[in-house]
View 1: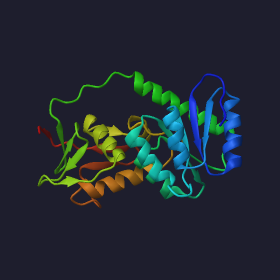
View 2: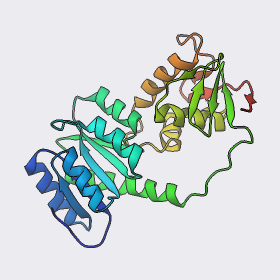
View 3: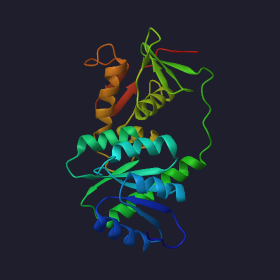
Length: 245
């Protein structure tokens, strides 16, 4: 376990001792308070001893993997999460972002880039904490095509009242679209407004998320009418009104 001067607390979870130690030493030398863990058990013990500001979480851990630990962290703790993945794990990175990670970085990574990403995630986390809570619409439910989104319970219902399973990322996207009905939103705007990462402006992860979301809300996902693609600009939610619960 390595500690530095007073600063943001970073929990580094990686089963590779060399990466764990070298990353911890570098960040400690740049003002972070660092704590090291080799697996999920040690991660939980470290969090019990003191909540971190950011968890740097390796995806490929022995036993309980990084995706499972990301879900657990999102359910139990208000911390920022940066996933560490292999360079070719595109699908896993997208899934990780969907289950609640704030950012990712691929191995082998440059320590200066890691420090910049940590600072970026921490800035966004502080900005969200300081921002006033936006007023919600008078109604708790918003109509999304033939479905209804409950803003209070984060649930999506079909036309017959049956619940449709959605992830936290699904809800964030639907909420942003509902709050910006009939307005074109670029990919960068969607990534920022859903509290996701701001890096790599040509990242197509948002396209994958919207394609999955369309399969849940569109009568004909191949010809979307609810969330439309505006070529060269982004996406637009076409509103057809709202209803109360």
